[in-house]
Length: 397
Image 1: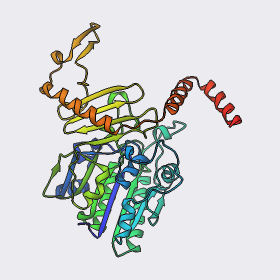
Image 2: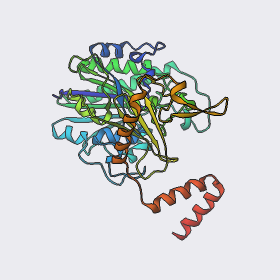
Image 3: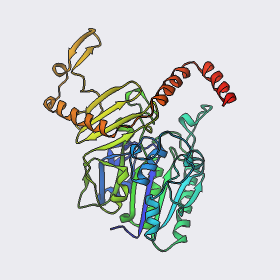
Image 4: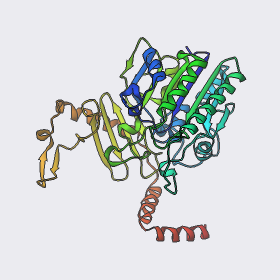
């Protein structure tokens, strides 16, 4: 049963490890902890894609990327239909979206899945960091600016509350880093203050807290996001009002089911998927989860990975290969003789199951497109040649 007033607050590129309810000892988040104490904390909640626009298309349409009509990551010419925003509107809800204005300019055109009747509230609260910090200038924390940022968000929340006294769905999506702070994960106390404002306005039973995706956070030598389906990038936070007396939920669930979860239903699908790209893109990586196992297929080089994320949550050892190279001795070594894993007897059966599921859902582009992608990848290794040919192609097209 849907509540009359529902608030979903998400924060971009937020790893579970940033939040105190998932073990972060370096930040105080009393409001989030209060929600968690009364609600349900999901430990195995997965984004359908570690990319903002793709993730939002999936959660809004309730479809995985491979199930959508999209082949590549391009600007959309038309709105997605039959989204959760459309369904909520048809059920009498006013849908309001509070977003950072620059994020809308950058990514909204790549998703267009927010319903024709949703009302956008655009505010300037983004601190440019990382890959978006083009000149690489140093950024200092500014507590006065941090307080102003929280106040801007508070005033916008109050504007939404004053605009309707009926059924309301409010979605707040916060940027990578809130204005006033200087790094991923440095603003979680501000995030908690905003959750506190929502608690005062709506009560604890109306609030859902999550993210669009995580980031690599130094894992496997990478610090950003978008091209990996490892745990830090796709296993995202979700804290909800209490569902079925569950304090913690360990069922693997995708963010395509957020609408069901808002109704108090936790789907139990056999497989959960996460995809870095649409089916015609050459750098695509697909993850398929079944119970504790995660299968990864890397399209660019045709390699496979398999992990037991319960036994090996940091995905150190790919258990597909039974023979590996001893990097120091430079000799092949039987993996099951040097890596302790108590369930070797289950690996072959699990791998066959996941490979069959992969074959069932995998979509590919035409042979012509495959060749073009390979040529494009090759040419990008020589930027000058690629640039010259691109100019020539535009002239003759």
